[in-house]
Length: 416
Image (cartoon, rainbow, N blue to C red):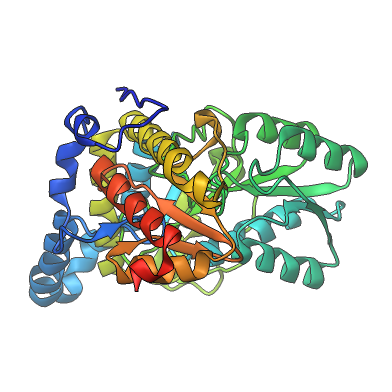
């Protein structure tokens, strides 16, 4: 699927919407106010109608009707939905993905396990532009484990490059335990070179942990194809799982028995209801479960994931490219003359499904946009982040939202 976007963009998005093979997927989401321009699906996706119906069914039929007996099918949900996500959107093999816990908890567990698996190495590699929760977890692990973080300082738009990673690995040859980066940068949407950086980490004898929070459901990942060791991510952004939806973790099958889960909980126990005295992890990804899962959140996440799987990641990616190309063309035509700078890569292959536009008064502009019925996201100090979710964002949304931004930016009193 391709949607051709003229770089000298017309202000009229009608033809682009008419050519969009995914246009009908918007009808499968609850959109109570069609006049609202929602450009923040990379923070919280819209609710699928199927998720709303599923939540009601779980509450009224399974919880109320089956009561404790519902655990006969709820028990398998973290692994069943993990397989759906893994096969459909991440390129993982069966029994390598589990839906569980939060991204922060999963990141802590996998980073901790990676450090334990490389006891003679002291260095953790990440970048200063990585998402804060990842940096905070690594700070704590470095402090508690007597490790050291080798910080990358990448270009703020392009993010960490293969050369950046190669240089730090060479500087700490033989001493790097873990390399961990975000696949898509949360500010600029820069896509890191996952295959090449993973290969570099392996050549250095290091484990590689990817945060997929801004890539799952928007760009192909190819975990098995590229030999990725470990990955985490959330389900409430492009996967439309709902606020507080459970996260996921990926562990390549040959590492599952080698690595030790630092939080040993009863849902990961082999023979769970035998209530054994000592912990014996169940085989496979199930051994990485911890406590009782939130069934309602899992049910909603499953429906969100299912919609994306049905649409297909290649079609989603094609529309994501077209939406962001259109947004950049409108930035160049309407916003650049008003003093804006593009905060995302121009090359489509290097860019995820959001676009950042930057001006010093971005915080106030964002406030006025929201008051005018356009919901973007502000990221300090000067970025307005336009999240273009391929299943729910139309080209008309992009045009209307950016036209309102341009009007407000030209005359701030216009948005009051």
